[in-house]
Amino acid sequence: MGIIRKTKSVKKILNEFQIESKALSTLDLIHRFEAEFNKTTIYRVLDKLEDDGVLHSFQGKNGVKWYAKCEDCTEHKHSDIHPHFQCLSCGQTDCLDFSIHIPKIPNREVSFSQFLLQGHCENCMA
Amino acid sequence: MGIIRKTKSVKKILNEFQIESKALSTLDLIHRFEAEFNKTTIYRVLDKLEDDGVLHSFQGKNGVKWYAKCEDCTEHKHSDIHPHFQCLSCGQTDCLDFSIHIPKIPNREVSFSQFLLQGHCENCMA
DNA sequence: ACTGTTAATGCAACTGAGTTGCAAATATAA
DNA sequence: TTATATTTGCAACTCAGTTGCATTAACAGT
Image (cartoon, rainbow over all chains, first blue to last red; front, side):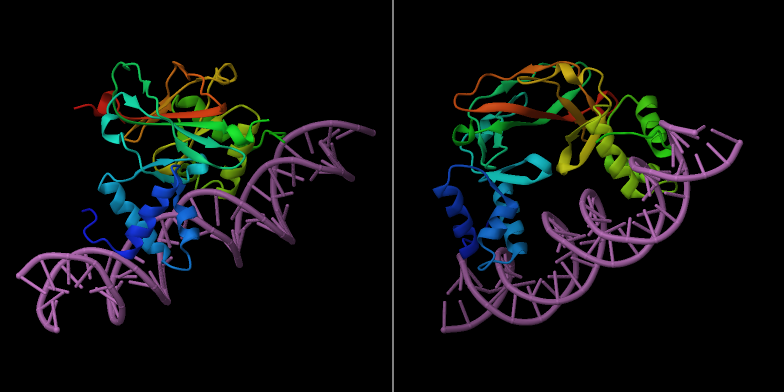
């Protein structure tokens, strides 16, 4: 499918990713727009933006779904991935711009990968 | 906390991990024992076995929680991890016994990491 | 083996994320 | 401006996971 119409919700949601260069969780977005948009709309818009390749998603801590606008997503295929980092103190989550090479695994065919690093960001380091 | 008593449920659940060397999801275990144990019990036993270091957990596809008995878990600390593999056809999920080195990231302190590979296992490869 | 203590269990009710169907609203092409 | 097809809001629903509490069962001490 994909985004067909530039509706208010699409524009506003995309704007959130524009002004912050980090990842945003579904729940965070639902909360930010709870006065303005129904949660169903948020789920649907995020789904479509991902289908369109505008956003990509990944699982954070506790299986929570995060979205980020990532410029170089199409490059990262097969055995190269870009990892994500989630701060365990403040929760800030973002893409890391290096890639990790996955060694060939005998008798397995790897098509996707997810790499989540958890720890403390610059602000939250002791 | 941790396991204090060797109850029927603890023994039976551990046995499942003994006879299969792969990972099992919470839902799979709840289903396997639905006639025998309450789901609350399954959740609690798995929690405790993880606290005890007998099992370790990780997030699979769609944020589903998986558990596996992993012999060498304590070795894998800081910047070395062992990845997990999930087959997108049959769903079989297990630990991979190699480790991936995580490059130092400036201004971030990494304490945990999760690495999930998805693709096709030996049986499901075209 | 028996008993008392305390952890473990089952149950029912609850929470909260995510989904679905449908009627109303709105973006866009003509 | 209008027609039409997409998008939205709403309400109801599903389902994984949690909680409180009364009952059951493991096990240490005798």
